Structure formats: C-alpha cells, structure tokens
Image (cartoon, rainbow, N blue to C red; front, side):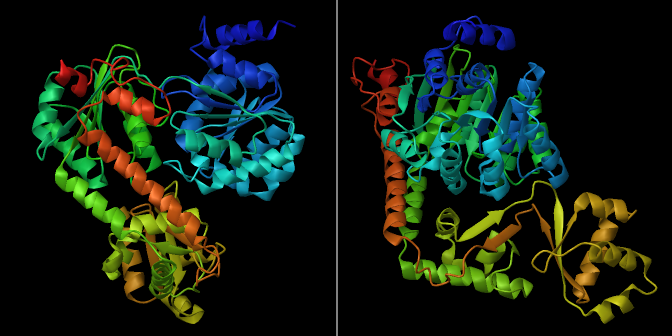
Length: 572
C-alpha cells in the first residue's frame, strides 16, 4: 500500500486530473486520514470539497457529507459520478420510494459518499441505520450553520452531535469559508470534537478590489461600470421584486440579465443558473439565495445594491469574483437612509417574553381562523397575508419568525415543487350532491378523497391536477375558485409566497423559551450589523485588512494593505 501522502496525490491525479493540492488541502486530508477531528477554514473557492472527498476515498468505506443546500449536494453527487466515484444524496426533495431505493443501496455498500441534508438527521431511521453502514468519515460542509453566533444558523445542524455519539470512533471534518474565532469555538463545542486540529487559510483574495460608494443613485454608476467591465457579473439586491425590475432594466439597455430569488421554483432557478454559467447571460441579479457552491472563474464584477446583514455574508458573496486570479471588482453601494432604516428595524425587533408571546398568539389565532383547523395543526401560511392583518408586526416579523423557528417553536417549509393544499368545508352529503351531473367536479373530488389527509389537509401536486383535468390551467383554476366560493373547499397554492407552518409545541405561553440566551443572540446580530456599518463608513484602513482582521488574522494596517481597494487608492 502506498505511503499516505503518495496515495492522496494518486487519488487527486486519477479522479480530478490535478498535479498538486492547493494550500492546506493536503495537511487537512492528512489530519483526517490519521483519524483526528479537524476544522478547516478555507475561503470561498479554496477547494473545501476536495478535502473531504480525497480524505473519504483514502480512508475507504462510506463518507457521510452533511450540507444545507439540495442543489449543491446534487451538483457534487453528479460531479463525483462523472469522475467514476460512487455517490448519492438523500434529501426532502425526493419521494419516499426514491429515498428508500437509495438507502437500500447504502445498506448494500453501493456508495462511497452519501450526501444528507441536515433535516434528514431528525429521522430515527437514520440514527439506527448509520452504525451498520461502515462510515469512515463524517464531513460537515458550511459548518458555521451549527453556531447561533454565525450568520446562517440552521437548528437541524445540532443533530449532528447525535450522529457523532452513534459513531464515536469516526473522525469529523468541519469545513467552512466564513467563521470568526467565536464561531470556530462554537463549531468545535457543538460537534463534540475531540482535541480538534485547526487549519485556517488566509482570507486574502489576490486581485479582488474592494470599493464602497455612498450614493442614492447607484444605477447610473452601475451601468457605467458594466460598460467598462468584461466577463460575467453578479448583482446582489435586498428584495425579490428588485431582482426582476433591475434584470428587466439592464436587458432593455442591452445587457443580458436574469433575476434569481428563492420565490422561484427550483427548476426555474436551476435553468437560470445554468444559462449564466454557460455565459448565455452576462449578469445575474439576485437576492442572497444565489451563489453557494458556484465556481465560475470569470466573474469580473460583484456588486451589492444595499447593505448585507454581516461582514461574513458580504465576504462570502464578494469572494465569488475573480476566482481565476485575474482580478475582479467588489463594489458596495449604500445610502445613509438605508443605514438608518436597518438600525431602526433592528431596534424595533428587540423582544421580551411578553412581546414574543403576543406575536406567537397572533400566529396561532391567524392560522386557526384562516383555515378553521385546530390550533396546532400544520397550516398553509402566507407571511404577507398575516402582516396584512397584523401590521403592528411589520418591523419585527422576519426577526421574530426566524427566532421562533430557530428555537424550535415553529417550522415553516416551502414545497420543492408546485402544490395545492385543500381542506373540506362542506358535509359529505353536500359534496355528493355537488358531484352529481358535474363530471369535472366529480373528477376533482374523486381525486381528492382518494388521498389520505394530513392534519385535516389534502395535498395535490400541480402536475397531477393538470393530468386529471384535460383542460387549460385557467379552466381548472376557475373550477377551484367556484368550489371555494360555493363553500365546498378552501385551497392555497403553495410556492407563491405560501408555505406550511407547523407549531411544534403546546407551550403557547413560551415559558420554556430561553429568553436570556436568545436576547444575547439578537445583540450579536446587532453587533454584526454595527461591524458592517463600520466597514462601509470608514475610509482610513485598507478594506481587505479590515475584513481579514475581522476573521481573526493579525495584520498591520499599513504594512499589509492591499494597495487596490478604494481606501488604498485614495491614500495614493
């Protein structure tokens, strides 16, 4: 058997065709190969996936990879399969039959890599199965998601500790691109890592030029920049509507652009991303839903129209530019009014137990009255509809709603495919009479009543409705409207700002809510905002030095200045 490092190079050459590793990759792989728990901080584009993929092949057996984005895991699985490496993924976007088929393959040892979304860790079946799968490595991608102090906390990441307890002798490799020293400590604690080895690459991005512009009219500057910039571009905006408006405006001015946001179907997002990746579209205008896992080398401009929520988010998004080392501009436009409004929103979203209790009660009442279901049933929910009835929560909604999800009082999910939800409002006798002499009505109720309801609700995929009603979409939608108006059904189209809200506890007084802890988390969010404000308003310290110091690097503001950013250029 070859010496370990020779084996690593042989695997890299055989499957990826590379002659050498990037900085720190080989050290990280060696640490994991030796059986050590390891934390790796590699900047965006630094080759994080190679570390656990080569390490997994070198150790043999099965590598479990926990990653938060379905599209990202599917892309990685496909890339591994194209290299001749056996890999599969299990996530909420698959049907139960397909999940069972893939897990049967895992049971039979058919795969070297199994990608899982963190939500799958909540299933008891997985925790009982994992011990017999021959797991040799547990890789946690986007590991900052396990920390409340991080910028993208996912409660289900906490379940990884249960997998660690089932596999006490299996090393864990936690990788992330953006983590402060505090977040790294939290990762190590929450994953139950034992004497972990830490590897941290520099957060320097050679060739990336940072700039900030205070303006109330960014579009004039943006069009001028695009006119003098080659390659592809990403423009980040804060609201979904703004993505569509700006993409249309740019296209009308001769710049091919597409919008991208989480309100689109997964199929549409994938189609637009692929068009941009192929170079058919020059500019992607997006909310922060776009970019994770994207490795396009020729991005020459990353523009932010509006202030990101944190320096972590900004660094990650800006770092998608210039990955080929040939340079890129990362420019951020903001206005003083925006700073004031964001600060005001943060201050208004502070909470006490009493204010949260009132908000939670309003959610319960709204869901119960809208659909006539029991208080704790899973219910169709539209944030916009709720706020139209409770305008007093307009400033606090996003913060408090996410807080109750993070503390596992609520779960809000959006479908991965277009679906309709129905509840029956009429008696069985009335429904039978409505079906007589009306073939379309009869076909609809036959389809609906042939399915088992979940918590008083019936779910029908859009594709099944279209197949059943051999008519135009408008015809069968008019049928649904008529049946609702006549009092037979209530229905909701999921995926158009409407999802499913589940209440996970009967603690409606929030007595078990850890108020001091979550208030501290909110204060840290305010501190991240203040750090972001400090970044854009200061003009004395090199912007790259400021970012790198934020992530824990010890630098001299003068000796280590980049010489490229607007601050350095201004000093010259």
